Image (tube, rainbow, N blue to C red):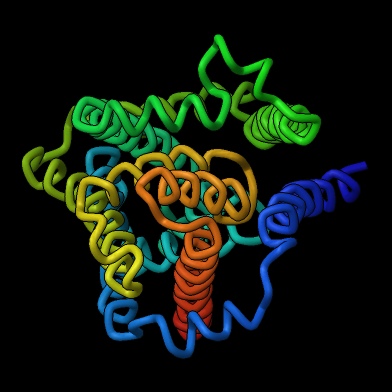
Length: 324
């Protein structure tokens, strides 16, 4: 049974992502993709965007190490960074598995208490959630007309949801619900051992509350803001790769960034499918032609996913050469 569940965790999100991508690109001629890569895209801007993707993960590793310090854990900075690289790369195969994997990396190579590190990861996610909600609120205030149009066209508004849903829309919604329930069940199974040990619960709570005792709160805040600024620049600079997005401006990129951030919550590998659909819809609202928008999100997501995979492979090699 456990073996079947493991395969299901991989196959179901992957099948869902493939289904959305097939639906989005079923009418695209691949000659158009080749032409976009060969003649329309500025590789200079794409390459300039990549260091910000790396820096965001490096800052995450630095912030994580700072958060671990109040619990009495002192892992090496390089181990924290490699663990973050591996967590993102592993999530390309099994969504959400990276959060547990990176705690395991610290335990194996630096002897860090697993339960405490899990607690700090949860705290990290809470901090990130607060930041992205605040960013979303500010973005919504500045771009209310765009968001209202987005809600109307995608059927999110309560009044028009049922009328605008097609059979495909019902199917996608049902699939998202099944994936969400499955994710909750699997997460509960993964952490059920916490209820079996008082010592483990104590260590977990220490990790959760570690943010109260961070020695340099200003530095922690700067790390947190820097992470999301780098994520945004990693995405925004790709707008200059194409003529049809270069003139949209930073606010339109911010809208697409915020919507895409929520889209990756759907448990598919690196948000594949859901991110493509959400960001392309925003681009279309700003006047980008449908095919151009679809090609943009496909190219950007593929190259940024390749970067995540390469960082993961590099960390695997680096850790393999290190003594336990």
